[in-house]
Image 1 (cartoon, rainbow, N blue to C red):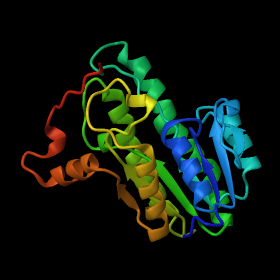
Image 2: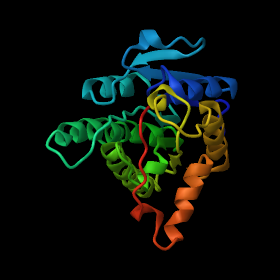
Image 3: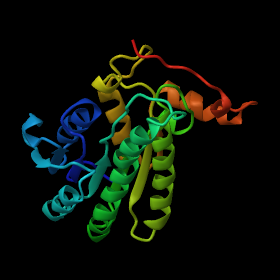
Image 4: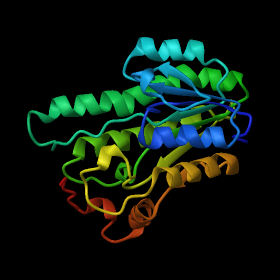
Length: 238
């Protein structure tokens, strides 16, 4: 599908990749762009419509669906990445929090906007996943688990929406140069580069985006012996 002339909604649009996506959509000629954030006052991009949208809040999501009934592109970008292991009691609270946002929040958005995309001709849904959908690192074990679940969700929604001709895209990337990973070492890809590859994938009709070298390397590692996902890399915050 063409981004030019589309009507798009981006969650988590106030900073990082979400902000870059909004800017790229405007530059690519989208007819209208809804920029969703918990605090819409933080959306400082001209020519977009800021909306209040906390994807963990059912009332917010329902209100957004009522206000954005003309969307043809939905970007599930909002997410959190709390630090913590899984082998301790405190991890239950961390795991519930990250699953509520990254998995259930994304599912809630799919439930709300799937019928809208269908009525508007199919369109496209983009779920921002991660190279960590496929491997687990410390101290982001809860985040990795949530992204694995979100990857499975993305694959399921793709199958369920075939009849309504909605393109469902899963985007995998390593470290993106945003506030979320500011304290982690390693090579980071500028968010505008990731956003540009997502736009390219939409227009090419690709269902999976390996947006950087890290994601391509991890994906290829599935065929290694032993496979990449059995390794135990450690990523430490500074």
